Amino acid sequence: MKLRLIIVIVVLSVSCEKPYLNLDGTQIIQIDKSLNSKIQLDEIELIRLEDNPFSQIVILEEVIHSEQGFFINDKTATNTIFLYDESGKYQHHINRKGEGPGEYRGIKGIVWNEDLKELTLIPMDLNKELKFDIHGNYLNERKTNQNIIFSDFVDFGDDRLVFNISRMNHEDNVMLLKGEDIENKWLPYSDELDNTPVLTNKAMCRIDEKVLFAINARDSIYQYDNETQNVSAKYFIDFGSKKVDLSLEQKLSDHEFFKYITNEDVYFGIDFLYQADDFLSFTTMSSGGFVVFFYNTAKGILHSSEKLLNDKLENGKLDRIVGVSRDGRFIGLLDTKDIKNIKEIQSIKKNFDSFRNIDREDKVLVLFSLK
Image 1 (cartoon, rainbow, N blue to C red):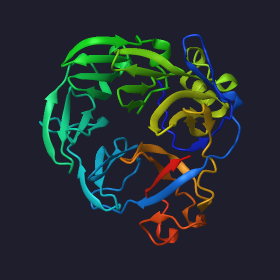
Image 2: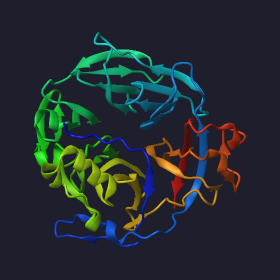
Image 3: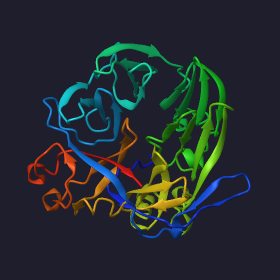
Image 4: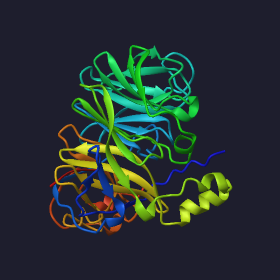
C-alpha cells in the first residue's frame, strides 16, 4: 500500500531571484536560490473561532468566506463543515454521514458558487454532489458521471473544469465537462507521477476566466484559459538539489521510502494554491512538514513569511494558508502551540482580549494582505 503523509508543520522559504522564461513562456522559479528576506504586512486581523456544541475542530484544512461568514472544512478528522460568522461565533454545521439521500460517508472537497450562493459538498466514494445554502441548510443532491472521480471543480456557466483523481480510474487528471459529457481533457495518468505519496489536496485557484492548478507529483503550476479552453504550464518549480527522487519509491520498501522522505532535506509536490492581488501562495512538502511560499507575480520574486507577523506579534507564526477572504486577503491559521509566548507589539484588530485566553487547541484565523 502506498504511504499517505499528513504533516501539519509549516516552514517558509524565500527567494529574491527573478525567474527567467523558457522558450514557451513558462516562468521558472528556482527554489535552490531562495534566501531569507522579509515580506511586509499591509494589515492583519485575528479571529478566534469559539467553541461549538457539536465537535472540536481538529484539522482545519480549508476556509471559504461567504457574505454569511466562514465555512470551515474539517474533512479528515470529523467529516464536518462548520459555519462561523465573521466575528468567530458558531452558527451551524454540516454532518450528514450515511449513504441515503443528502448523506455522505466522507468528504473529498467543498466548492462555493458565489453567483448561486450555494456550497457544493463532494462526497467520498459516492457519485453525487450535495448542495447547501449560504446558511448551511441542505438543498438537494445531484448524480454525477460515475466514470469521473473528482475532488474539486470550477464552473464556467454550463461548462465545468474538474480535477479527476486519476489514480482511482487511470483517466486524465483534468477534464472540461459540458453537462456530464467530457468536452476535452489534459494531463494523462502517469503511474510514476499520480500513484505516489505526493497527492494534491486543494490545488485549483480561479482568477477571473483563468484557473491555476497543480497535479500530484508534477513540478508545474498549470493554467487553464476559459476563453481559449487551452491548458499551458504557467510556472515550473525548479526544486534543484531539494527535489525528491521518486524513482526510489519503486526500489525501496514502503518503510525505507518513508524514512528517506522524512529524514532527507527534500521537497515534493505542489499544493494549496491561493492568490490574493499580485501574490500567489503555494505549498510543498518537506521532511519537516509543509513549506509555504508567496510568489509576487508582478515582480517575479519568491517571498518568505517566516517573520511575517514579527512587527505585529512577537513570537507569532503562521501555521499555513487555508483560503482567501471576500475582500482579497489571505486567510492563514495562527500557530498556537506556544500561544502563551505571543505578545502584541502593535495594536491589531482581533475578537479577543488577551492571548492568555486562548488555548493551544483553539483555532485562530489570521486575515492579512501583503505589499
